[in-house]
Each structure stands twice: as structure tokens, then as C-alpha cells.
Length: 203
Image 1: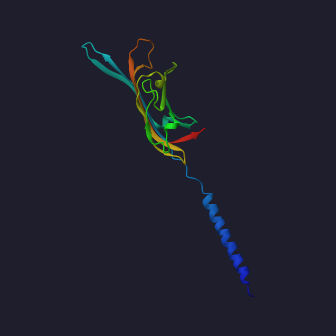
Image 2: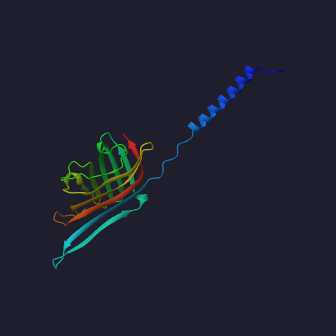
Image 3: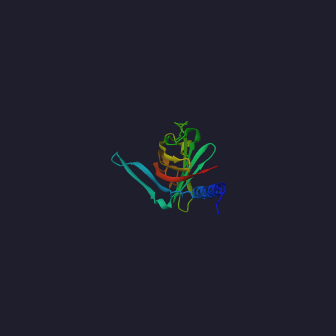
């Protein structure tokens, strides 16, 4: 028995259409790769310069370097600022980067705002939690005359919303976070850290 040519053509076309649909569905439904595990570094140091009996000075200090697994990093893109928070142990570091300064790709080093640089794009603050004895709060950008360092963004994956970079804050003439009296010697606070593949939450 002869199969009509038209029937054979339509049967073949239907089969090809079904194969194409299945192929498209497979490629479309393939799961997106998981985000890479974020990695962090964070350290704090409090350095003191004190006079010696001979008329010179002596250097001393204390600080903490945190293990990456103990550091929690959070990035939040708000309407006005990109907020970066890093917390570990006694240290809680906070940045707000003005969104108008970020540009398209974000990759840049952004200066820290202070009394002498009121128009710099990054607000910075820091909280040192004393063991069983409250906390020392530093609003560097509001009260420090000078701040050295900055926030550096090295890469930003806009599609996956992952950001990587580093930061450093160096500010002199700050009160010792463990001080009890008003006349205790001042110190230079140094905060340093880095972040890789930090997920940015959009608000």
C-alpha cells in the first residue's frame, strides 16, 4: 500500500517539531550554576605611640586577625547607597558607597569621607564590642578629621550580582576601645579586609 506523499511529509515535520521542542526545553530548563562560595579577610589593629623617659617614643598595640570562616559579609544595594557590612568577633565594619559614584562597572577605589573630605563617596563607621562590657562606637566619617584608605571594588558581576574587592581604614587620634577614662592615650585604628564573590541583595 502506498503512503501518500503529503501524509509522509506532515508526519516527518511533526516529529522534527517535537524533537526541537524537547531540545529547547532541555536547554532552557537547565539549572543555573550555583554561586561560588564567598571568601573574606578582616583584621583590626590599635597602635599607640607613647613617650619614653629618654625623650623618645615607643610603639605598642594590639589587634585581631579573623579566620575567613568566622567573618560574615553582607552587601545591600539600596536606592542611594551600596552598603557593605563585615562582622567577626569584636569587630563590625560598615561602609556606605554613594551610588552616583559607582559608574557602570563599579570597578574603582572610592575615598573615605571625613571632616576634611566631606564630599568623598564613602561613609565609614566601626563598632568594637568589648567582651561583656558594651561597645565602642566610631562614626569615622562624621568625627574624624582625616581618614586614609578606601573601598576598592575589583569586579562586579551584574548578571549574578556578585562583588569582589578590598578595604582599608587608617585613622589617627582615636580613643582606645578598651579605655575607661577620658584621659587615656589615643591610638591609630587600622582596619583591613577583602571580599570575594559577595552576593549583592537589591532593595
